[in-house]
Image (cartoon, rainbow, N blue to C red; front, side, top):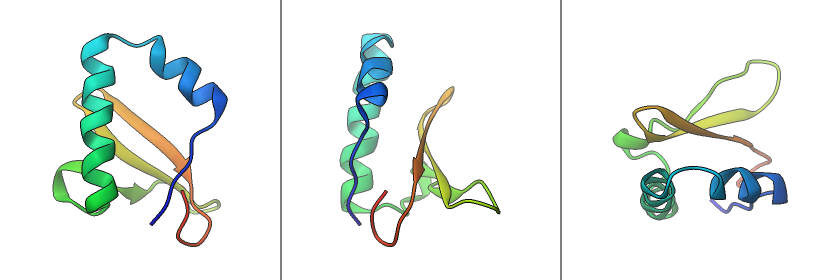
Amino acid sequence: MTSSVTQEFRQRLIQLADTVQEQAARAYTLWRSNPYHNSLQFKRVSQRQPIYSVRIGLGYRALGLRAGEHV
């Protein structure tokens, strides 16, 4: 599975605390090697659109729009 991020995502990410940014980096590294790792809870969250969620930490999630094997 491949991924890309929007400019808005990058802008919002850098506004978060350094610890959250580090958690996001670790989660992304894990997602790249195994998107369905239990700790990430990667799952579809909308029945009408292919919107997926992945756990960043206890209080943070990232959302993505899936098109085939690309998020």
